Length: 107
Image 1 (tube, rainbow, N blue to C red):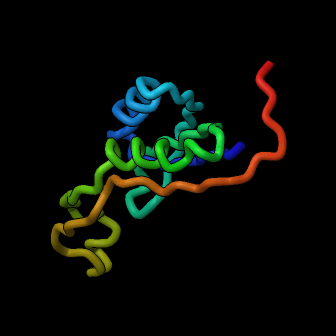
Image 2: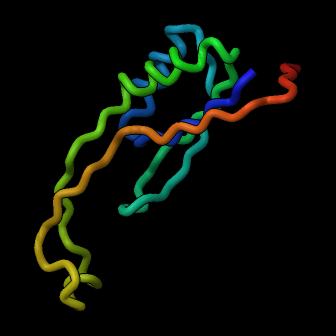
């Protein structure tokens, strides 16, 4: 048994969760934040048999695409001269961890 922990962009969460559910995978959703923008992320926990790990990762990858976004400089940084013009950054995608599970009990 494996535990997949996937950190995805909040904008992609509904599509990823729906696709996982359609393919018969159950997930637990946790609201998280972090990264450069300290923006909303979703962390999914998914328990699956070892042979299904690649399939779950493929579903997550299909529905959590990277994209670029233009951000305006924050007032604090602009006053310090660090960021004085809009910056293009990459958002989206997924960070996935796969962990061995010694015991899985569903009560």
